[in-house]
Image 1 (cartoon, rainbow, N blue to C red):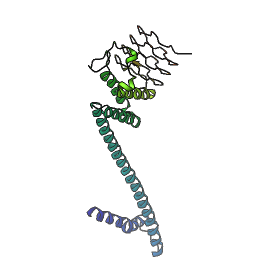
Image 2: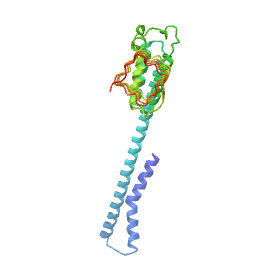
Image 3: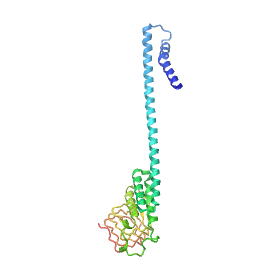
Image 4: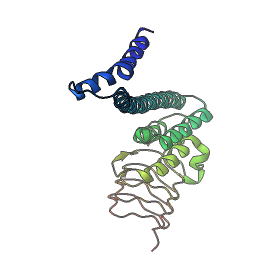
Length: 258
């Protein structure tokens, strides 16, 4: 209230008192008629009122811009906090004993990567780590299919480990918009995995088992497949430009066409 009263007092001085003082200074003691003096005072008053009005408009515009900026910063902070919470919950789901819960977490991470470029690389790294830890090669868990099992007895990856197939598919889609960088998926059990149409460039598959995997129209540019088991894979029209296949086992593989 005190600030408002002070502002009103200042405006009264500007509009009522100041114009007369300005006219008296400009006249320098010269005599003019009362009508001429009143007209001069009114001209000064009009100019001052316009200046004050312009200043008020400018201040109002600045205050509005400032408030909009504060609101936007608040919205951004809220959005970042919301994404952080979703990210944490999704990562927690990956540790669940239930396959469907893990799949839900993987898809939640995929949505976060689509909505937040800032978190995309972290999501990609988490999916790669998920494959390495859940499907190591050679198999380590007692309920896993033995490394020596006939490939004909190995179900497709989407059947025996649907969460791993989801992680691999999401990884191959997200990598399409990713700047080339090394990604480690080495020594993973990807027997009979469905990789069709995925972007798996610059990925390290060293020592991985891709036996009987479907790798049709896959971008494997500069991928590392050193000592990988690629028996009976369907390469289709995959791109293997500058990929490293040193000591890779390609017996029975169908080479890329064209």
